[in-house]
Image (cartoon, rainbow, N blue to C red; front, side):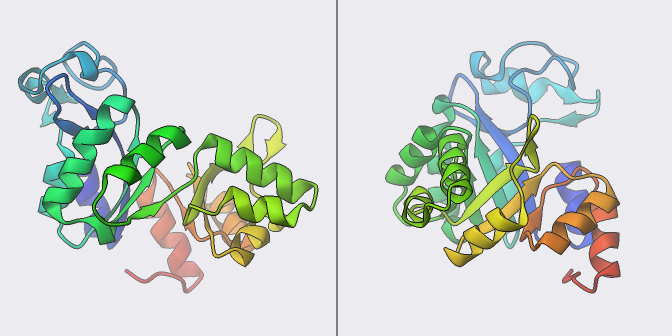
Length: 229
């Protein structure tokens, strides 16, 4: 919760989190598939009961937060939710429904199948970002100037959340950003921690940056007169 709180304290109204479900269906706002790297406990989140995960301490100090806690603690905060497993789909939908958070979440996943499964379960629409196949189809269509195919590729998404490069191949270019915008689709780039890169991508016209350095991103936005916090 400290990381979310720090971003809120800096003035940000948007945060991003991966989610996993415990073996008994509790959705946690946690990046890793297991507890080993950043907590004092071990084991895959999906294999552990919530009571075990809750006892773990991040950096030896802070408990693992649930998605419900994040949505409840900051009722006006907009949360980008990355579904990391099929096991997390139904429990995540339940959390969103209980919180009535449809208008302030964006659902995403590398798996378009997983993302669409969640959308089908929700009682109301939410914002959503294309998965790996959607992004690949859009990039290919834009690259060969196949306008109808590009439009079809992003027909069910509100944004594309992508790295600047995939290996040696550029993903975010002036052409892809313009093509997305023509179709009413935003472009968000992850994970950008260097202010030089932040400026360059914003100059390209991207709509959002995902960063581990919220402090540096705020400074860049202030320099550009784009800070709305």
